[in-house]
Image (cartoon, rainbow, N blue to C red; front, side, top):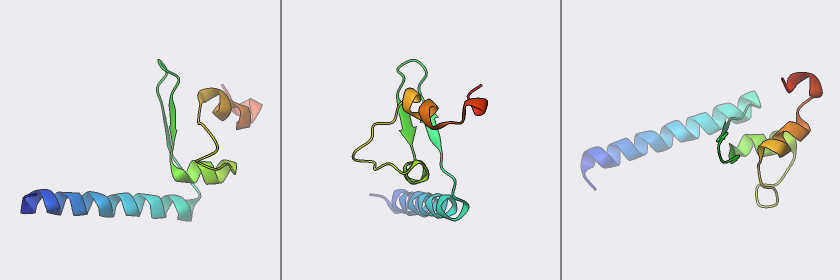
Length: 74
């Protein structure tokens, strides 16, 4: 690995750690949805917010909708 690639990798790892720390402090998470396949990615904090275990729960749009307040679904 070139010195520049190593530097970039370390910077990316630092940014990722900062993002995860900010999510914990703010009790926020993020998710990404693929509306074509229905696949849903949850950050670790989303699992914590909804009180489910990452190894035991498969994110889906249906599962997400089931925990959102009905007034917020639209």
